[in-house]
Length: 236
Image (cartoon, rainbow, N blue to C red; front, side):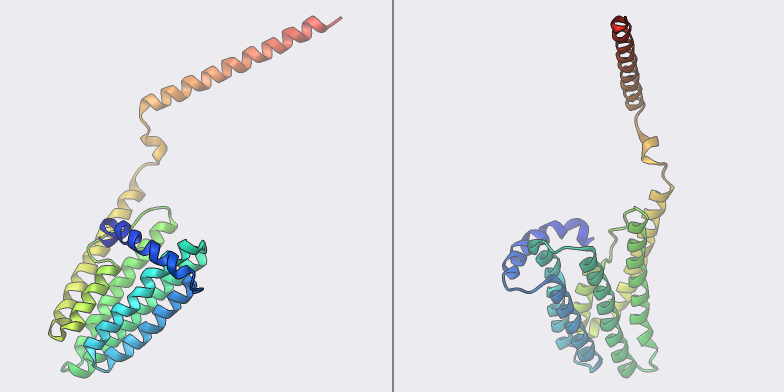
């Protein structure tokens, strides 16, 4: 949902910031690595039970992830390798933060079963990320859905900042990420089942193409006839 509605607006804001940061000498990969290191600290803080501080660190760790793409574009260093690093770092960050929450719930909730909730959220989050990656590798689009990564980060920040809401927020995330997984599956299934684009062309386009092909063929035949006549005239 974030990519579809606000990504362009956010890019307009981050683009000049990335251009100014470019002069500092920091690369996009360094920003990605910084965000990953901050995610490790976030997970440790959350696991120790300091949830509000964990929310603050989670917000701070999202800033380098938001700026690395802008820096790459501003410096002209955007590359498949950087995009791959950024994607892997996002998955590691998700695993660390939700793992830290699971650790916290295992220590504070009776019975320890509640720790399975953030693990379930992690599983469905990984599924929708895989759906997008696999769809794009096949030439389809799987963007969109109710609970993409930006929404998940925002929801986790709310749950961590207000600890009484953490478990309800996790249940909500699980429900919405599951819906998103179904949405993306249906979207790609529909694209994959559609006929090739060439079959969707209006009939008039085929008629125009055939007419142009006939004109080219006639022109070629006339050119060949003219060459033969010239050769016949030049013969002794």
